[in-house]
Length: 274
Ligand code: ADP
Ligand code: MG
Image 1 (cartoon, rainbow, N blue to C red):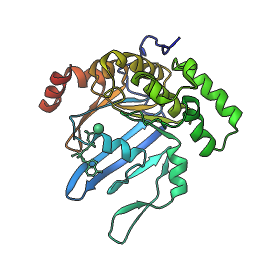
Image 2: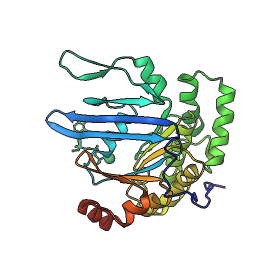
Image 3: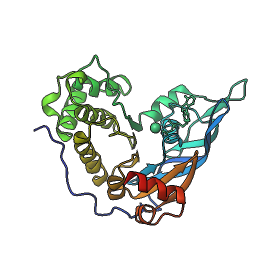
């Protein structure tokens, strides 16, 4: 069967994660500037175990840049980041820009923060199975047999067991994105960042990918999900953020944020996307 396991959405949707749950990812007052353009203007956030945080915002509001900072694909211009209480070490270069200070720490921490991209980003020259075992083998140094067993179980979970030897080009967009999610899971991340995971898909393929992400939410995975799928975000999130011009314009329980937003901008955003 080529279908992901889907189930009812988590019953706890709308409830914030326990305040005492461990902080998985914390950012404090991060800024990001590209030359004269200040894209992030002071964002603070703590994601706790079991949080499913929907991140909303118009195009250009800084959503991707924010996620890329959380996965260390970008270094913030200012601010601090902790993964499970361990602060990411940075230093200032001669021009005064913040740089990663410890590439080994970065590699280690990045393995704990998974990312799923809009364009899937599978390695085109590798089979689906090889895409899944590459990072666990190279980054974590796990034995091949163990990686293959785990990869097969994950492909089963996302409904792609029969596609393990296919190359990405021979899969539909929805299958590629499900493979990309399985690849991220293969690293046992403690938090998964999704950057518009269904925006590149034909409409009829969106549901199968949302089904997989919804099942992960139901398992209690900690996730941040940038999406314009408002109905889905409302159903699976425990908390929602609205970014506007690089700032958190609203942050709260989905019940309130989606139905009775404070800001006019969020109201207009929701009207455009519902
Ligand atoms: P979103 O994901 O919300 O659409 P982005 O984070 O991709 O927003 O982009 C926010 C702003 O930052 C945009 O104006 C974009 O052009 C700019 N930007 C993003 N990445 C870069 C970069 N590497 N260099 C220069 N500008 C960038
Ligand atoms: Mg984006």
